[in-house]
Image 1 (cartoon, one colour):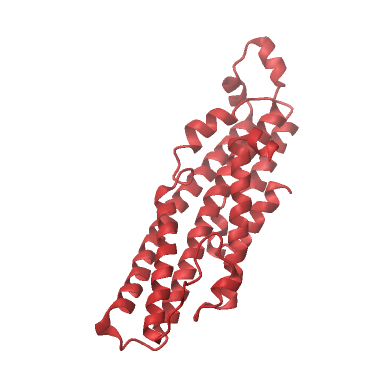
Image 2 (cartoon, one colour; image 1 turned 180 degrees about the vertical axis):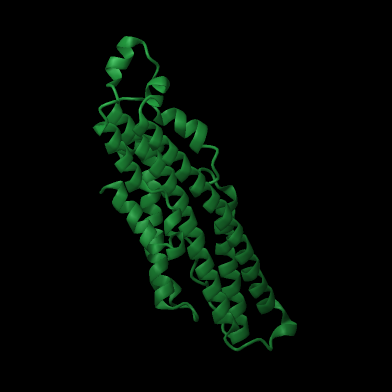
Length: 260
């Protein structure tokens, strides 16, 4: 399956407001085609014979300059969006924490009757968006790696390794420990909210179904307040998360991906 199709699937299940902030893979592919079609771009072999360095040669090609200008713009856009989205999710984490505190407070049992259901829905929605941001990070990282691989294959230049190391690796969507910590905490919050909800309702679950990458819509639907729309969306996102992780593993370790 082509990477562009995988990217489209992730964009489709993400928040519609996120769509402009995914790296524009198709646009960059068009830039590469323009490089190939440009008669002023000499073959790499010819440049090597003249002793020209790659960087100087690429600088003479207007389509090459346009490609890397577009690439850097997409990189800056993706990094800025990831930082902002992570901050928004930190605010939402505090809201879910507050919902749990209110459910656990014996003096606040006069809450709205559907407070437990609302808290569960809020936690599942928050967890869903955490996973979507993780998918965003993975797919954008892989997108930059793959478009550079395509560029080098089409032009004969060797730019991918250095650009990924110098320009992409320092970006916040490459390594994101804070996001991963929020994902793990959301799983704990969900368990605690489920337990507090049982106490308020006067029921007791032997073991609330887990909110984790192994969760299923059938498990989650056993809890009040979590509807089919939320659980079906979560199933789709978790499946995409697994697929995106495999793509990233293939980009970072091609030998391992080939052996799998």
